[in-house]
Length: 387
Image 1 (cartoon, rainbow, N blue to C red):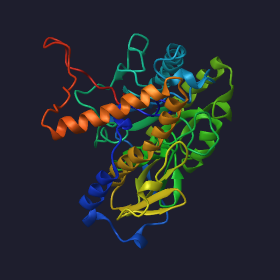
Image 2 (cartoon, helix red, strand yellow):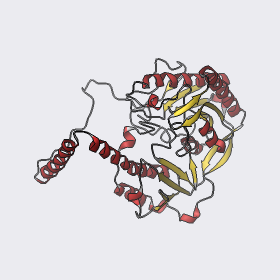
Image 3 (cartoon, rainbow, N blue to C red):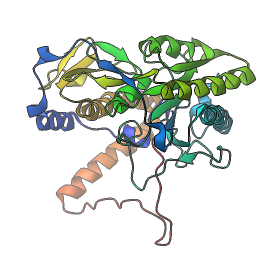
């Protein structure tokens, strides 16, 4: 995920700590005692799909683990490098789609797991393999959890992914900047989160691509076919494989992934409830203000809580992360203070605070209008995953 590194407008909402408290209280009856969590985050189960009605594969893409990519600006919408990043993305996805069909897939869907900030999909329809279908919905949806449905897909592939926070990988992070996700004491990647999400339905992640650090992170998933497209030299630099070689490998290994699925050589990951989930915040994020909040244990920059299902834990994690990313505002303040017009900026800010307060107390305040389509004839908006 990304904007930058995974911040979408939906995820940028700053939720106050009280929302987290409400969430914890709402789940109070479902939160098991702290000593009941199992030691492993998931249980592995062999998978043999029913291929009588075809093999349906979901391609979930990110945008930091692409072949030919060594510039972090390439996955941020609005930068000069972003259009080139789109070209790299579609080339990798099309290489994988080709392999999936060669391996025996009969239907392939593509969903956005990145969120560059582009109101349109990062994947350009005009360049996408015509055999594939983009997932579009009438309402906002979470590409990691809201699509999970029994019988919808036989396998999931992840393309252009990144390593977890603290791994030293290219643009490495988990969910967004400065966040780590810990399940029963084990820090996980977004790929493993996808695996556990779909594992509820017995659906395996069968293929992935990204840098060498992600390859190391995914030693926990030895059945997947993985293509290392570059070697991370740091969070903002990488040594690239020859692009043609990497994309040929994407096709060959994705083909093998479907063949493995059909042959029963893959595994699904079922979350081992009850779960002890932790959200770790490192700069530029910060969770310290939540220390002492009822229902949480806070230590070593990590807020930990107990839940009886992965989805319940994930929903609370999103609220926690929104609180943690309030730490970003300190950098906004720093940027404003360093601006030559700092005094004017902060003066206008203070006047807006006072005006809003005084207008409300005097009965003059009006709620700002909700943005909507520019005209009644505008077509309904479609959502493609992480925006």
